[in-house]
Structure formats: C-alpha cells, structure tokens
Length: 546
View 1 (spheres, rainbow, N blue to C red):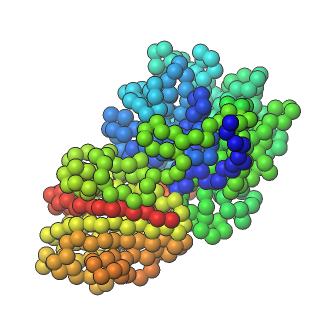
View 2 (view 1 turned 60 degrees about the horizontal axis):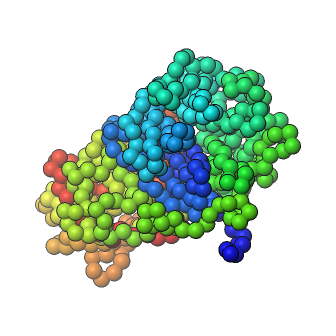
View 3 (view 1 turned 30 degrees about the horizontal axis):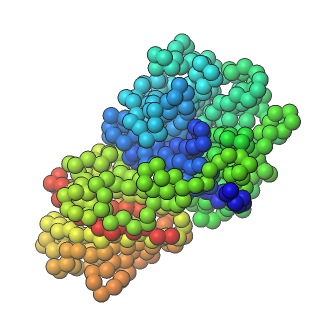
C-alpha cells in the first residue's frame, strides 16, 4: 500500500517563457501547451500525472510542414495555442501571426490532430484569420471555434468582441457563419476565450486588462453557448492588479481542468518582475491554482490572488499518480539535464531554434561526434535563416557556459554565446577576426536597435581556437567571462540585463504598437556568416545552472 504524502505545487510550474497555458487531461494524464512565438519547435508541450512534476515533451510543430516562421516578426508566430481532445484525437489549434504592428493583425489560425500527444500530427487545416486566441470547445458531437475578432479600424479599440463558429469534426472544416458571443455589458477588450460546460451552464473564461500588470482571468456564464453572458459578481477569478508587492504578477489568461477525482485547477500565466512592477526578464510563466465551486455555481480560487505554493491533489483520494513516467525513457520528476554534451543525434527538449527548425544545411549533431555544429547564418537583423540554438532563462540568477571551437577568417564571421531577447535586444560574446584576419574575442550588443561593438576591449586569441565562454545573470546584472586554459577571466563591464525584458522590448509609435515583448529572455549558441559561406562553429558541453 502506497504511503500517503502531502505534496504542494510550487509556482511557477513551468519557469521561463511559457505563457498562455492551455491545460488538458486525458485519462490519468495532464498536458500543458504554451505559446512559442518565433521559436521552433512551435507549441511547447509538457506532461504530468500529479500536477506537481512536469516533463517536457518538446514542441508539437517541429517542421515547416506544420509551421513556417520564415519572416516572422519579433513576438509574432505562435500565439495562445489551444489543446483539446475528442474522437480519440488530440486537437491543437494555433495561430501563426505574421503582422501585428500599426493596428493590423494577420493571424491565420490552423488545426492539427494526432492520436498520440507525441504525434505524428496531421497536415494543418486552415480555419480563418478573422482574429487570434482561437480555442476549440467540444460538447458531445458539437464543436465550436471561439476567437477574438480583431478590428483594425482607428477608434474601434482593436476588438469587435468574440465569435463562435461551428466546426465539423467529420469533414475537418468550419461549417456555417460565425455567431457573435453576447458578452456582459462593458466587457471591453477581452481575449484568450476558453469555454466549458458544467451542468446547465456554459462558462466563459477570458483574459482581461491587457497582458501587463492589469492582467486578470474573468468568468462569465450563460445557459446558451453564444450568450448573453453574465459576469461573476465576485470579480476576477484571479489577478494581481491591485497587489504590486506579490512575487507573482500579471496573473491572467487561464484555462480549467478537472482531476480524476473531480477537483478543479486553473492554469494561468504569471510573471516575476525584477522590482516592484519592474522589468520581467524571465517573461511570462505558467502557474496553477486550486478552484472550488460555490453552491450557486461560480468558480473561486483561494483569495483570488496568485500564490507561490498551493496544495496538490491527494494521489490516494483523487486518483492522480505521482509515479515517474518512463514513456520515453526519461522521468517527469525534473527538468532536462543541465549539461548537454551533444551526444544524441537530435536536440533535447530544452533547446529551441530561431525562426527555422533544425536541418542538416545549418545544424548537425553527427558531423562531429559529441559536438553541435552550427553553420553561420544571416545577420541578427534578418528574419530569415538565423543560426541560433537557445534555451529559456528560468531564474533571475543563473549561469550559462559552452565550449566552442571556431576559426573565423574575416570580421564578417562570428560565433559565440548570447543572452538574447529579440532582433533588437541582445548581448553576444563572440570570436571573430580583426582586419588582419587574427582571431579576437569581443562583445557586441543591441539595445532597442542601437548596435555597439567593444573593439577596444577585445581579447586577442593568437592561435587559440578552442575556448570556453560563459555568462552570469544576477538580477539586473549580466557579466561575461571566458577561459582559454588557465581559468575564468571576465570580459567587458557589467551589462544591463533588463534590456532582455518584456517591458524593455515593447516599443510604441504614438498609440500604435511597433514591437511587442512577449517572449522572455533566452541564452544560447549563435553563429553568423555574413559572407553567406556558412562557416561552422563547433560547440560542446553547454551547461545551464541555477
């Protein structure tokens, strides 16, 4: 007989950039799908059997057949995926946002299905591009697609409300015209709709207040699917908007799940700012909250506030299973290994690539044993064909190191490690060549598009071609270092890590969005070859430590 042990869920359950969580249970298995924006593979998936331990499954959209991010703008791409299950199939709805600036949003929505969460996923079914944050609701044989309707017209607030369109699962296409969802009076801009049915009521969860510090999860209900809906008179289901000193902020964009024993939980996004309502280098993360239901049928979270710890389901009373999951040879009781010697033929699930999936023409784990070979890609300004392999920053204090072997021939060839946010905000500790073709270690940076290179502070390398590069993130401070044999030495001054935050990345032109900041910071391995020659850099023993 298994011993009863009290467990807690520690938030965030998915640290680093894991926003817009869509949670689902199939049998004894819980799944979370989160937004990935311009990073491949698209739609990160995690699995759990107890809501406490989460195992990364990698990304669902792992090929250009499923997702083409060529030319994707910063913080475009995959917004707010939705995971559901019907007819023995997983259904994954996602957008691929190619434009959001200047009042316009091009957000074609697609649907893929698979018998297993591990795939293979079907060819994408095009749905529509009338608006983003689409979700699929199944009620017996009836399925509806919900989404925000984007309004590009000046003075209209950007949103024309929500709509629902019937989806025919047999023909795999939308059927009929969309119907407007009648929202509560004064609803304003709401997004991230998720629909549930409980008894005679349809419950509509929405994200209100934008994606910043006024974010919240709100609930409304109706006896008919398209409304009219009445808002919960008790206010938001969860928010931190009036509590700026809480460690978890920006609470919003939620989805509900029931455990096998009938307990309810809310998955929602949070952020951990560096200071009070300050910059969020880690981006938006996934948290959980327990939900109870009032006698008159409204959901409630404890205090309505995000918490660092919450009670986990009792595995004996509830039917959840805390045992390790050996489905793919790895357990689900922790994160991926912190050190990667690149001994496997494919990248581990902790890694992502920028705007293009791994392919032999630019990335190889077999050309040289126990090394990752990156062929130099296009410039950091390009939205096409970069050569960047990175992982999410998951803690305010962490370190990243990698060994690199590289032989540049010109100042147009560079390779090294990066602390990266987007094309306009990054730091790059790199090896390149000076005007005489001699190898030199330098620091380059970009801050809201302004490029600087510390040529005077560079380190000549002579005949050294193999060295170890490192960076240390300490709250708002970023420090760079290197080791050519005798031990670690610093390079350059202390840098401002808040350049890598969501808040710093966002740029406006008047009241119009120029650049969004949705992704959080990444650290990784980067190679440029501006000659278009694809000069390779070999990386070994990439280590991430908290």
